[in-house]
Length: 202
Ligand SMILES: N[C@@H](CCC(=O)N[C@@H](CS)C(=O)NCC(=O)O)C(=O)O
Image 1 (spheres, protein in one colour):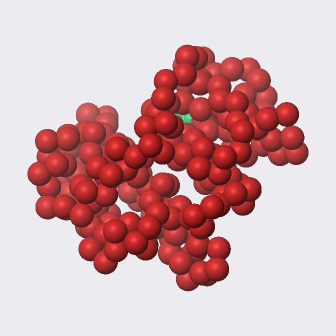
Image 2: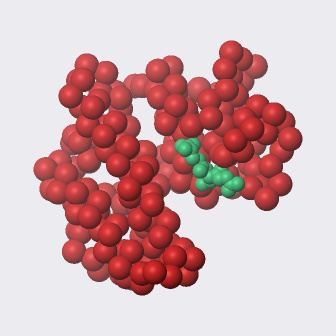
Image 3: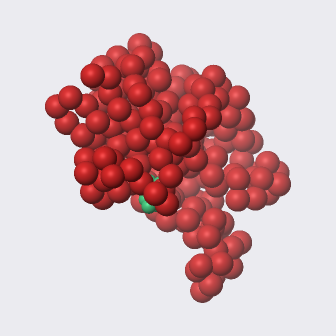
């Protein structure tokens, strides 16, 4: 049986999983889910009810990062996982952990500022900019986040930076982060991203 992916097109976690699976070349059947009407079969397999979910013959992966890592363990032609570089692997893990915790919180506050009225949207943006500055510094050293080529970190983070940009694109594209802008632009124009965003009907 081909692997089965439950996905939601605009979800940044699902995007990173779709890109890693496409890159690995593993055949996958994708089911586009409506988050308002999740399929019963998906909920049976993963009661926590978040996407993405990857159903394999012998296991069900319920976290986007597990799906990315599983895909790369099947086939990683350009060594995105930095297989022979334990220090690089640690850097990947740390960057993704920071993205998925503090930056994701700052992003949600910025994006949904009306729901968090203690601070203004601009104040939430300023919080998120700490991470943008960190990425800008990394991108001043190499073309991609950790090397002069893509690693798992770029693909795992880019969908979230894209969301941050989308909250106020005029602000983002004139912000003092030129390396980050160029990196995001390359990502948005990449075949990997464009193919992962191709429309499927629910
Ligand atoms: N830690 C999970 C988070 C996934 C997640 O939160 N996905 C959101 C969509 S972007 C979701 O499914 N939310 C459930 C809902 O909105 O009902 C992962 O990495 O896969």
